[in-house]
Amino acid sequence: MPAHVRRPDRRPEDAVTTWRRGPVPTALALLLGLLLLLRAQITDRGGLGNLVDTALPWSGALIPLLLAGALRRRSATAALALLLPAGAWLALFGGLLLDKSQPGGDLVVLTHNVGADNPDPTGTARALAASDAHVLALEELTPQARPVYEQELAANYPHHTVQGAVGLWSRLPLTGTTPVDLEQNAGPLAATAPAATSRALRTTVTTAKGPLVVYVAHLGSVRVFPRNGFWTDSRDRGARALARAVAADASERLVLLGDLNGTTDDRAFTGLTAQLRSAQETAGEGFGFSYPAAFPVVRIDQVLVRGVESRRSWVLPATGSDHLPVAAVIGWDQASRQRR
Image 1 (spheres, rainbow, N blue to C red):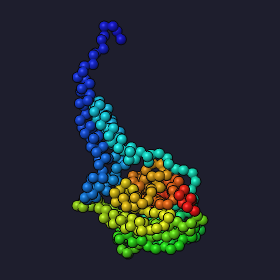
Image 2: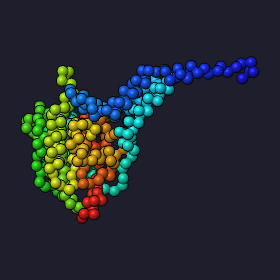
Image 3: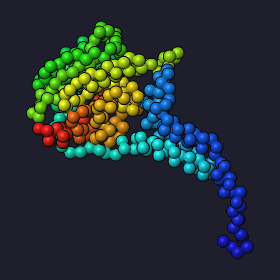
């Protein structure tokens, strides 16, 4: 720099201005942080709380946008305020970004809503047969498609049971199958099945290490109505009924497979998540979104366990359904092995 050119002195007012800039991104960052911290206090009137719970993982996408706004405005206050939502989001969801899979395991379980409007049930059945799963739970079975799945899966899965619109195919023997009352109507299958069609079952898989109780469930659909908002009554009623059934079940090892039409963060599933662990959360990598198949944005297809440990969890490629199949490797946990 030439000697006659002097660097302008930084005035104290500049530092003050830096902290005063960007009131809008600062306020938005604080509001996002409070939303994450106080989500449980949000009213569920009109299904608002359920909607927030479901969309909450995507709130992390707002943080880079707000950071860009803070940098554009050169606002130190806005950048500092972003520490609140960033910290809250990482505390809630940061652990899901890690790969928690482990080697080993005893059984591969898989659940798939095969879709009542699936144009290619044969292709879907063949894809599932090639998955190497020991147990397949299928939801949204129609009377028209059921024979297709029975035929295509028979060679790999000699044991199966169907209750209404849900079924379980297994390489291992099944005993004691009973329907589970979810206290709801047929939902999306109303046009193809009677209103009383069962949407859940309980059965026992006989393994070399002892019995494994398996529940298969398809909870009621979530609806959005212009006047009523986010409607979840049928789904929530089924979740409570399913939680009561699991709580009353004294089985040592239990797996719940199915389309629950909600995420495990949803407050409607507190009764279930208090008793069961999510395979994706304990042994997966990422959020494991399963719906809609064309562009998954939410995980509503679940593998939940009790008395066994999840070793790995993943999402399979798309079939003809609007859901993606999800699978998990489970193993008898250390406590069970010691008791044996």
